[in-house]
Length: 281
Image (cartoon, rainbow, N blue to C red):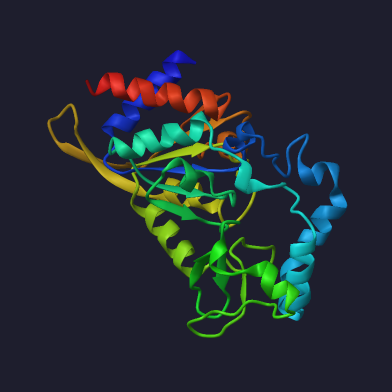
């Protein structure tokens, strides 16, 4: 374990453009249950998963009713506003502040990276702390709308003050396209990084799970001297991909990642950040 942490720290220090991808595994240590793990929300309640698959269709068919039901029923993950970031989130902030991590792309909708202080953040599946106009894509802080008043006055759904489009939660539902701005920026990041640190994701939810594969497909040319003194050029991977996960994933099994550091992100990421700090002294 210590050798792998040291290797990850050296790879990060040597990288020119490192990014991090995070999933539910980094938030479970803050007390937020995951969805598909052994004790996941949907593992325990398959009916809730079936309803979730219909959520976007129901919104598009009747956004007023969707909002009324949404405000009447607590979310499956509880009150996310009361949940605090953990050591894993803060370790990524430290790596960003030191200039190592250039961007964090997260599957999580819990806003914990933002709460921890990450500045360059792409919330791939949106955020429960925000609302988004489905017409123009403009985002709003949730408290910019008095949703309780709109419910009481029967004025739901909320409408965008700019284009008058219908506003929904920023969280991306099944069947809903990934917002174009986030999808485009995420592809750009995967296309230019030379190190990808993957933290706490099962890598089975697409299209997010494509990002490491897109990065892995990139190749760069490396010249070397042969025994005859003639330079030879060969194609090598353009990116180092490191996994920090509790268990192996398809990325591990398919050889997409270079190596896996197995354990809790809340323990491993701070250890990596500390090792990076020592190397840079």
